[in-house]
Each structure stands twice: as structure tokens, then as C-alpha cells.
Length: 296
Image (cartoon, rainbow, N blue to C red):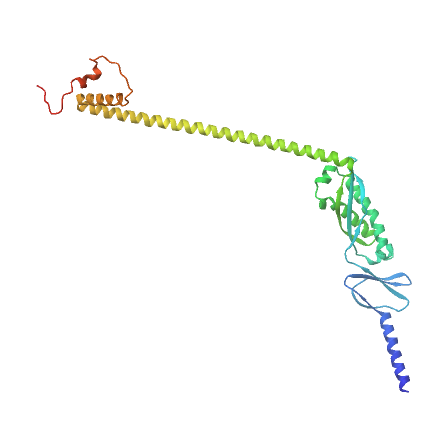
């Protein structure tokens, strides 16, 4: 009797555990889910948490709602002027409508990637076809992808129930036949810009030099004018002093001037003067008297 009761208890617990596992399920925060009955969706967009289902007849399909990445194939696109570029890109996408996603892809991420890939290729082809090669090279890549991302996002929300969060360009290459011409044009443009900068620098240097020369001439003229003024004032002052001295004792002044002339004339032993003996220049030498003597 005890063994039968134990077996019944164990069996009951097993049945309860099976019923619990068959009727209860958990949807994680990073998941979206739909409830199916014989493959038909009967409950959409089940929220995270603990839920109940009918065993056997009802099944639950869960989908990862985190960001997923699709590494697209390297593709060759033509620009507006029919020049080829080779683009390597990737797409970040996310399931936002589990019901539509299940109906469009059967919940298969590989199927979703195969559906998204050609749409991305078409969107990028249209975007690059509207731009010139110079714009593609010079423009910010994030700005370049804004239009295709928004266009593709609207399309994929309605078709697959997924949001296109980002399209990023990993690399843009040029075919070998185009690269040489592009690089040569870039080199020519840089050389032209360098010549323009050099010409502007030379013009600026000449302007600065001209201003400096003009300023120098003005300063020299002002200094020369000031020196002439000071020299004239000095000469006038000296003449005034000479005049005052002359008026006080004309004879002594003449004698002092003669001594100054003698000093300057005989300062160098190599100086040679040819004068007549009775020249006025030697007037004070001829009339000089010995010290202490007096005239009679």
C-alpha cells in the first residue's frame, strides 16, 4: 500500500511538472513572441513575463529583438557621371513587429537576411547614382547614408516588421582604371591650391614689406627733420654765444679764434702750409711777447 501511494504521488508530481512546463512559458526582456495554434497566429506581440498556453494545440515562437548585424556583399555602383565605386557596407536591423516578421520570414533570421540584402543593394545603388564621385569622396559617410537608411527603414517596417537602425560604409574603393585618374586630379587640385596659397603669401609679404619700407622712410624723414631742427638750433645757439663773446672783447675773441686755428692746423706733424711771412694768419705769432715782458 505504501509503495502504491508513493508511486501515485510521484506520478502526480510528474504529471503536474509536465502540465506546468507545457502550459507555462517565459518571454525574456530581449525577446518578442507570438502564440500559434496549428501554425496560425492567435496572439500577437506578447510582452515579457510569465504566460500560459494550452498544451499541444498552442505553440510559442520567440524572436530576438536585440540589434542584429547583416554584413552585406561588396558591390560595384555607378556614380552620376557613370564612374564605378566598390562599396563594402553592413546593416544593423531589429525585429519590432514579431507577428509580421513571423509571417514574412517564418521566424528565420537567415531568410530575413536574404530579403534585406537586395533591398540594401538597391537603396545604395540609387543613392550613389545620384552623387558625383567628388561628392562621395568628400562627403561625410554618416550623412551619405542618412537617406538610404530612412528609405529602407520605411520599406522594411511594412514588409518584414523590422527596423533598419543603421547602414554603415566600411570601405569605398575605386577600380584601378579610375584610381589613377582620380588621384591625378586630386594632386592637380592640391597643386593649384598650393599655388594660390603661395601667391597670396607672396602678395601679403610684398604688402608688409611695402608698409615697412614706407614706415621706414617716414621715420627717417622725421628723424632727419628733427636732426636738422636740432642742428639749426645748436648752430643758432653757438652763433649767439660767439656773438656775445665777440661783443664783450673783440680782440680777445679774435686771439682765441686764431689759437684754435693754430691748434687745428698743426695738430698733425705731416701738415704742410705754404703762406707768405707777413700773412695775417701769423699776426699773433709775430706780435707774441715773452712771458713776463712788458711793451715799451
